[in-house]
Image (cartoon, rainbow, N blue to C red; front, side, top):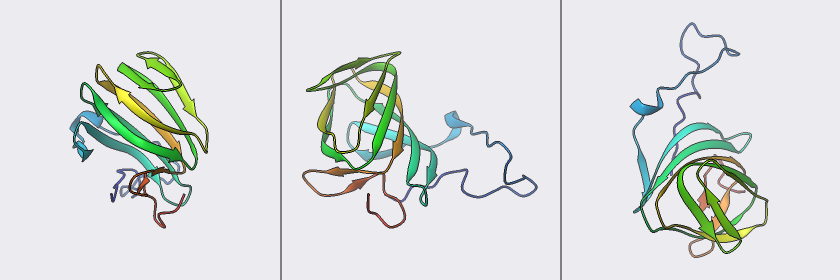
Length: 136
């Protein structure tokens, strides 16, 4: 996946320390796999940080993966479940580096996730999110 963050290039006439405002509704959805779509709100390859808006369909499964860095997720709608618990709308979950899980969204979900580092798919070895060098 080659994410493009609208904040990577400083628009002409905008100071480098100026705020960036995104029209999230106008941004296209990207579908990394069936049942999940996302919008990359922020991504910094050098810092290996990303903020992504996710939306999953009812009964979507996010395949088993191991976090190489921390993930923070705030659930806007629906639920996100794994063997450790259930995170419902209006609630927050933190997944530390080294944690391993498969996620199920039985009612679908919309959530914002903040990543420091990448997670690695157990089945394929693929990193997510991918940063410039593609290592976590």
